[in-house]
Length: 113
Image 1 (cartoon, rainbow, N blue to C red):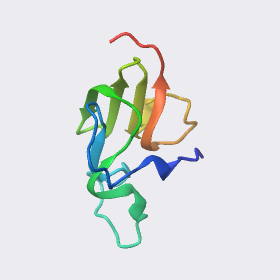
Image 2 (cartoon, rainbow, N blue to C red):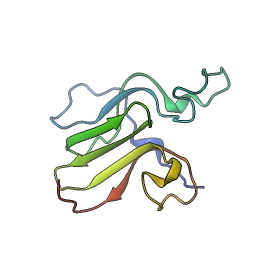
Image 3 (cartoon, rainbow, N blue to C red):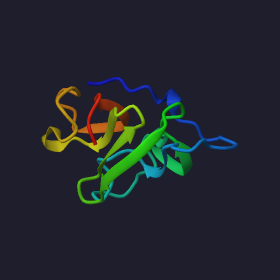
């Protein structure tokens, strides 16, 4: 089991710099398109307002897939971040056998885009 640091999620930004990665909706990719939210679900993964995911990182590109429920973001240093469903290890094997990566995590460094 991977321990995720959720302290980077911020909801009260007064202004956002260019390249901010913001998301709303659920970060729990086991729920997306599969089952309705329950009142007992961990609310920390359910972003009811736009939330900054990587406050100190300038993102230049984002790729996402609505069917696969995962996303990749690339920062200005060509470092790739991935989050969402990791079924078939589509986000990489560094997360062990975890099929969920709820917040953006580094999956590759110095990639060429």
